Image 1: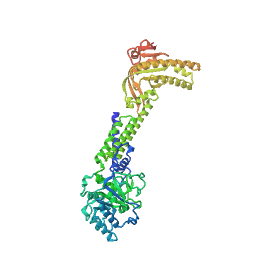
Image 2 (image 1 turned 180 degrees about the vertical axis):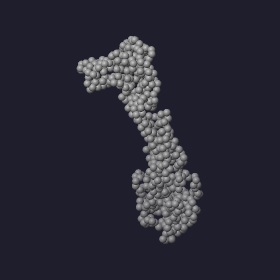
Image 3 (image 1 turned 180 degrees about the horizontal axis):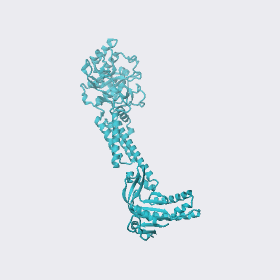
Image 4 (image 1 turned 30 degrees about the horizontal axis):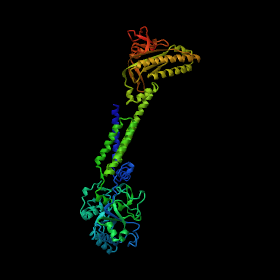
Length: 624
């Protein structure tokens, strides 16, 4: 019953831990970002960027150059470069017209601009030149989308003169929790009058133009409608607290990277080697320009994020988020299983099991993300397991500490420390004491000082207490040595049970051994007391073996662990008839110890409550 009770309590604690974690898991992405799913994605991304920390070998880096993707960066070298025909930012649109013409001649297949062209140029000829150049090569330009407080999407589109010859794709990226985790590929429906009725992302539109056919949105795995961005790093860059600028813009998944100034001035054969057959993405990386996106692995130019989306769509490399039902199932199932194990183990073993289980789950979920790009929730499942483990262990420690205090308080001064330790090692210390009373076979021992009343009349109270305490101290040491339980002190009388609360087959032998050793020590004490001028005394002892009721007896406010029954009374009668220095045992005790001790039978004794005389024996010593 104790194990079942502990199991039930542990399972309840596991459910409570799971509910807390599930609430954080289901929280909106914009709330409690330090503990919701955004933080879980951040943890996975960090593990993905540092697989060595988890001892995961041969993790795919997903940074291999994509020979279908190239990047042209508007960097510090490009801004103000008059040799390339560039002046201050923003550049005239004729610059982009020239770039398109050169890329078309170089054999580029598609060009996408991560640049907003929202207002008509002051000089209409600039827009016209840009539009004419776009007719020579499939071109996509970006625009931002917005969402009202009521959740209605809107957009600020490029001027019609550009939309007539170019594809458009939105570049806006949500950053719930302060980091980019993904981007919708398609937003629908859009307000009335929006071209096509639906908005597509820059990456989605660019890849569709590159392939010459529309992409199947349903085939792209998403998380809450967004394509999850695969974490990436910039070569040579380690400080994720600072923005990555144009001086370091080499992303591994773009086969080549070229500055805008270089693209406008490079020889035709060099540009052809760079762009032929590729989707070329153009965007800003300069520190002076505000186009930076906070990602899980650093603050990078936004064009890097769009380049990663394009790379994923071109290669079919997607992060697949585990279905919500699976995450929630693990969030409840694993803590329940852990609680079931923890409730049956000792606290130290339970702590080890809890730590191992949590670390094992973290390692498995990290491996799934790194090797299979499968996002299985780590933070909330591990938190549920950890909270469960802490709660169950705390419950176990608290209840078992209370049991230890109870046993120590009840038995600490009555039995040897070894007996107390043995009780505490049992699965249920309280039940080991049989608090409701149990019928057992035990050996009861009584000893009484002969002539104590007359002796006390000749001594001061202080001297009596000193001598009695010295006597009791020596007697208890012997009793504990042989596993006896000191039931009570009755004036100068000692009542002992062999053994309580756990009986052993040789309790009767132990009781007689203890009595012989006590008589020897009493003799030694008497010799010393005579030399000290104190009055020695002798002790009579009685021992009986039989069936007694053992358990707690008393009121709810004051209880005593004791033994009661007829055989207890017989032991009391025997010590009353024993002379000083004599050990008298009953027939039941004699039957169990006759092979170990020399005895002589005494005259039968008639005791109160018994009609027939009792056979009694005096213990003379041990058999040789």
